[in-house]
Every structure is written in C-alpha cells, then in structure tokens.
Length: 222
Image (cartoon, rainbow, N blue to C red; front, side, top):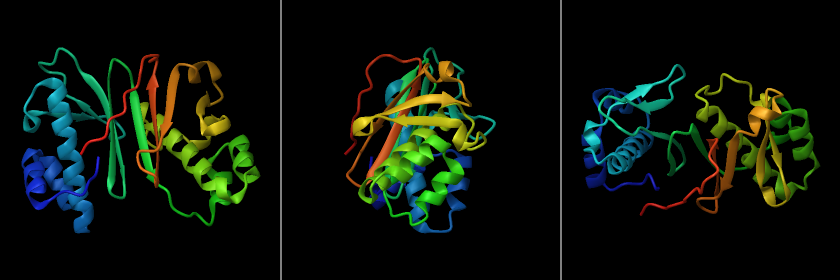
C-alpha cells in the first residue's frame, strides 16, 4: 500500500489512532515521516477491522518485549497474527491465523560499502556469495538476504537482538530464498516458510510464516 495520502485521508487515519499512537506520531521531526506513520497505522487498523468485523478505532494493541505489536485478546474468538513494514513511500502488511508471521520491505538503493557490510552482518557463506556475484546482481541479492533476515527477526519478536549472521539464508537460482539455519539449527529453520517478492520495481520484500504450508495470497491496496 502507498503511504502517500491526501489531507482528507490523513485526517481520517489520524482519527482512528489511540492516544499513544498520536503521541508517537508527534515525535517525528519531519512532516513526511509523521504522515507516513499516521497513514501506515491507519491502514493497519482498517485492515484489521475488516478481518475482525470491528470498528478500526476500537482495536487495541499489546506490545512485546522488543516492541512487536499484537492484538489484545479480550473478547476475540480468533486472534490474527500480523506484521508490517515500510520503506520510503510504501508499506507492506502480513496477516494470518495461528502462525507467527513477519514481513519486511526495503527500497533498493546503492550501497558503496556493501561488501564490508555483508562481512560484518552476514554469515561467512552469505558474505562469500555476495562477493562472488557480478556488480549488477549484488544489490538485488543483498536486499533479498537483508529482508529475509529482518522478516524472521520480526516474526519471532526479537527485533535486532539476535545477531543477523545467526539467521542464515540460502539463495537458490532465480533468487528464491530458503531459511537454512537459525543459530546453526537446521531442523528449526525447516519449520519456517519464506517467500520473497517485489511489491514495486524499486522495492524488495520478504514474508516468513512458521509452520504454514498453505497458500500465501498477495494483494495490492489502491
């Protein structure tokens, strides 16, 4: 979904937010960031409201130890898992039932220090893979690995507390990604399903679900 909203849309989205969300919005220094936060949270509330058949403004959130949002369970028969991410002007959302879920999106941009960054934060095998690629493929591979790692860390609620190089991703031909090990545990990694996608030509995203063998449905909001 685009985070570029009209003044009327922003006014509506802002009316849905809780007091703590409004306070958080006011802490953004740049108006563009503030507007994007309001639109992103407003859209999240509208989407959750449609799943729950509940007024968006009445939805209440809990937050995990590292800030991951979840729904308060009081009065809910089914509690959807959800996650969101945004970069530049774009937001992505993921929803499911009974499965931990995470999503991440990044705007593709040049990184002159890509090799050294990969050596610091990626596993030795991942770093060697990035270094082996021709220049025109490095950026796509780097951001594919990065979004996969971020999506997993968000799904398990650890934020960036787990070192990135302990979440190892294997890229197959065609840039298909597989979670190959978590802190060296390959059996645990096999319990997760990973999907990569490009929501727009200049963005890379990844979604990960624990234990879900079903279909992932992609939709774009206008």
